[in-house]
Amino acid sequence: MEIEVTESVSSGDIPLIIKNIRQLKKLGVKISMDDFGTGFSSLGQLDLFELDKLKIDKVFIDDIVTMKKRQNLVKSIVAMSKSLNLVVVAEGIETKEQVEILKTLGCDLGQGYLFSKPLEVKDVEKLFKRDERMSF
Image (cartoon, rainbow, N blue to C red):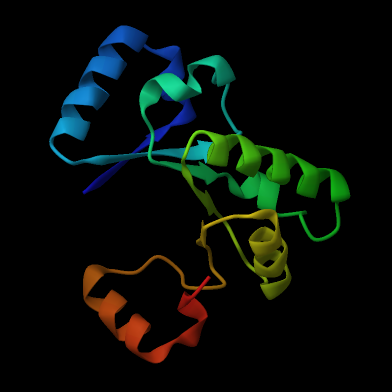
């Protein structure tokens, strides 16, 4: 099981949040930070949350093909995440060009409309059986 928290979690009761996350982790639950880069989290608190995965928000992915500065930002986020032993996911991927750049920058996984729109559970298995786009 995996639970996603947003960056805004870092503006709450930090000791209580850390306690709750530790209890969840003891149960084997993985913790992901969703929409990274859109909130006001403190990078100094990022390691306190014992995350397993960091999901880079779509806002960083949209212009990654045409904006070198955007590529540099994502490269820095990936490097920071890897130094914390986090799996890095790029959100909002819409083109193959984005995939190639994100792979080069070290992203582990990707999600977005290039692969599939949101689906109901019953339709997910069908998608994996018929669609080669599912690999990042």
